[in-house]
Length: 311
Image (cartoon, rainbow, N blue to C red; front, side, top):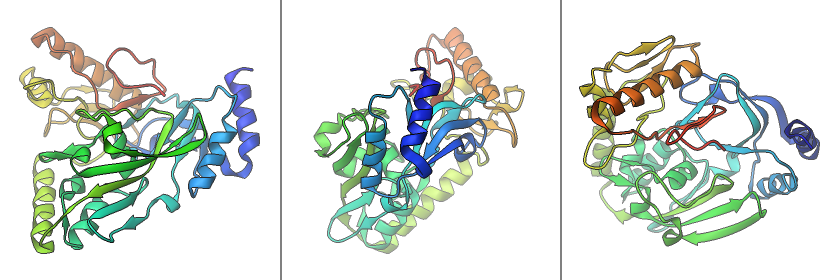
């Protein structure tokens, strides 16, 4: 069968749990880009496993979306299934030093609630507009720390095998912004081992991180840092040194405030963001010999080397 026919079969199998032409680009922090051919939001683990079983035998790509803080969706949209974890995956168990957090829980919420409970180690997460599951998958981090620093275990639903497994952190094989979690695996829970601390001190650390980010990073429609830092250097420094701050193509530009951020205008084009990204990478490579790799996942584009994984 064609992919279009497989999508029709999947829609039938999922029934009312599936939505046609589901908003996707508007769910991202760029707030630009097209729709997904199908969307579904399983409320709990059993419903997620039902989605996995419905996918058996079909050629339908799946995109797992958290807060959309690391995605750029092409204006043409995504010809597959968008999967968003429902409210049943937003739990948080603060009993003891081993904190269990649901995959859909927002990282700033995790940071603030653990700090208020006198548990320290996740204050950095207040500045990352993603989810617990997404943070595990990409080893998100900032301000001198990252996810794997406190992670001890995580729980995964495999959409291909329709199975659930609990894995120790050693199975994550985490490096800088990369792990062993595949695009067809959904992180539904993470366990972090935190240290006891003074809630007032933890709150002040969080407040300082928020103040720093407001002073040094732009707001508006963006996906945070676009490029990973090359070894021993800063992507933002390289872009700035090439005189690319403020570079504009159509409805997108390199932020005048921080060179590693690309901003999208309200009602703008995701394809313009992609054009700016490509231009920046090409000019930095020409001027310095360094080819920048993106942190942002490109969805629905014809993706070239080092530009993010197309699901």
